[in-house]
Length: 319
Picture 1 (tube, rainbow, N blue to C red):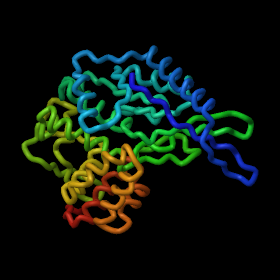
Picture 2 (cartoon, helix red, strand yellow):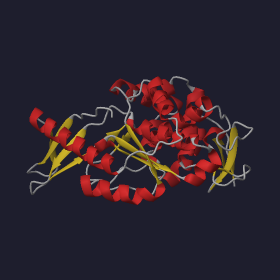
Picture 3 (cartoon, rainbow, N blue to C red):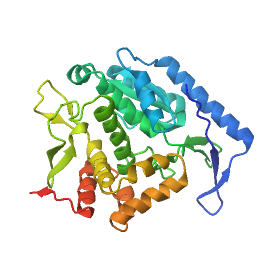
Picture 4 (cartoon, rainbow, N blue to C red):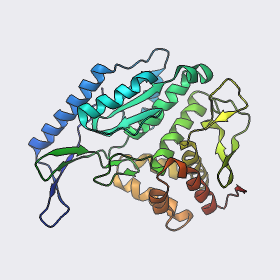
């Protein structure tokens, strides 16, 4: 189990409204990290990982190959997930956004991935491994400080305000799927599928690199490596919402190959974060902030891809 001690910042209500922000003292730092470790231990005891038939060593090796920090990965049956959500809430007070194919909890540095027997039958065990890559990518951020917010009546809540490119405003109930963060996680998953599993056309094994799909405004190209089968019919590929964000990352990477290395560096240091913003804004001034702030709902990811294509002068098909 990777070590996940967090730097703790203390937020205390101020008399003029809002909160004062300070670094927690060492005693509180230790106390909160012990609390987080205890939470994780309790949850992992109740939900051991089901790794049968999966190449988990290859998954973790892939994450390490890109210099990314590891996190704890739990593969569990779909029927367990409602119990996972309830247990995480009962133990930590963290609200899950479920249902979903996976979830990374920064506060306990643990990623849960759903093992769907039908999807594994249609796509192979590598499909579940690719979900693990996606969730571990979220866990690779070293900007996982914990904010301990003291309430007006003395209660304390713990929250991780940043996960990579995602920034949670204090007081939000959960972390929504941020466009750039989801894009990078799915982009890494696509690299794993194409390079480590040798499936350039994704789990649907499509013979072309790009597949055109319908959205509300027309048709958009998605990189085929993100495809998978929901049935045995190979001529009907499926894509997750995150594939739109990942394809946007791929198009920007093709225009400037320094983007992906910068996104990886941004998992480690603030200079990398600034470099990502600079590269994206070079495509069009203000584009980074727009992608960061304006497409933070899965159903808007296709609009985010369309926006990137417009900035890069890549034609789309409209209705």
